Image (cartoon, rainbow over all chains, first blue to last red; front, side, top):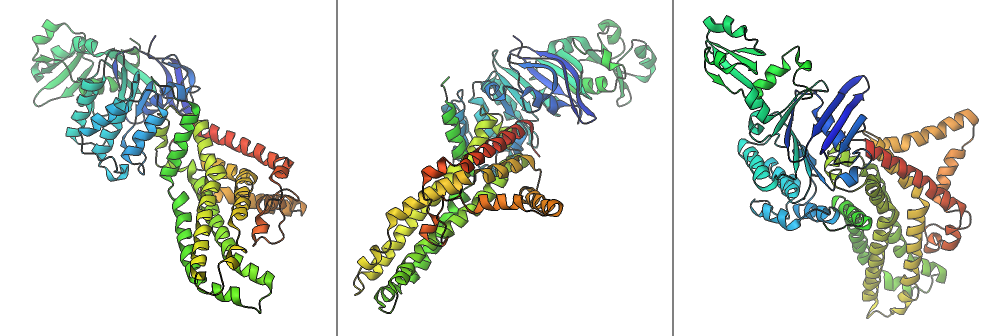
Length: 291
Length: 290
């Protein structure tokens, strides 16, 4: 069974189309990055998956209909949005009591042992904690829930680099295993690119790119070309070209390696560069979408 | 995986409300403290009231009892106001501070949440009011007795006139049946508005009712709607309250809770409550952060 499966998922707010017929399938045990510009439909897609918003089309998450069965689904799904979501009035001990009281898969001892590594006091209120500490607290709760799907919406927004690094290290080191699936959106592409197993680009409510990271790494190459080689390089049909210092950087989809090597230094493009290339490609909707 | 019953989820949801809204018990406790200070001062004149031979016995009875009745009324008024503000914010606040995204990430249904919030004005607040009032009145009686010890007026004069046990029984039925069940449609309406309104829920809760009343007056020159609301707010079904004097303990007495329980008015009110809560649940299901 796929963890998430959708066909023709559509959502409109009035005349604004937020999701425009999304077909996707996320298998168990993957870490999927959903990446897109502001207003592309990332959060709407996540909210549909979490049963927070109604939609048209077909969507199953862990075999359930999220809109009709949100509370049952949430036994197996965890969700963490950006940091403003934990209620500010609640005390650390209270939030642990409450989750322990309502969640059948919550292991309080595990949350406590994670919190013991931080400086968060049990009697503190969320409003008294720093942004980084609130994220640590939420992460401690999530790590103590034996869930099958974890959905993260900009989880590290507003955090400094140390907290961000620690966040993904904890997630990978102490949480993730083959039976879990993680779906994450973020603008900090560079930081998660080594974490992901799959990547999807979303733009204007459509999935415009959907590949495994293995596929991405074996398939795409970029090469820095001197101006005198530029015409030869362009003849190989790069999908994107950007100016570098005294040279141009061209990005290729499935090129002939030897031909490229003759033009300049060949390397695997970063996800961020690939994202820019795909987003600025006018013919992209035909490419890469679907798989 | 341990199993968690719906009752447990409801219990924790109610506790959550009490954590968030500490004014539900802190405000009446504060008022109770003020009442006790005032009653300490009032106790000074108590021996004189009991000794004064020129007083009519009925008047004396009233003078001795009055502070206890006023204490109960003041506490009731406090929790009524607290209850209104609680309801108006109950379903809007969690959307305003975006914490609804956290609550909805847990396996608690919208219905459980709405019922837990509704239980605050329907059951929890009447019980809090009752508990605090009984303790306050008992302490007032202790203060009065302490003042009378050693004075020639004697404690008996106070204890025969103030009978706390029947008073607390009357109060409990008044609060549970009157403030809780009889006012149920009001509480449901406030919760519904709270789930619906994006801002200024208190205005949305009151102005439309006022408008309906005025429009009815203009269109038909009648005031049935206003009478309906007023009747609901100010009293029980016909004959259930012996409202001779609302400023006395007898005025609070619900003649027969059984009579109230079988009255059509109560059940109509509960049906309206159910409709409002069902609508509030639907709204909470479909609405996200503001």
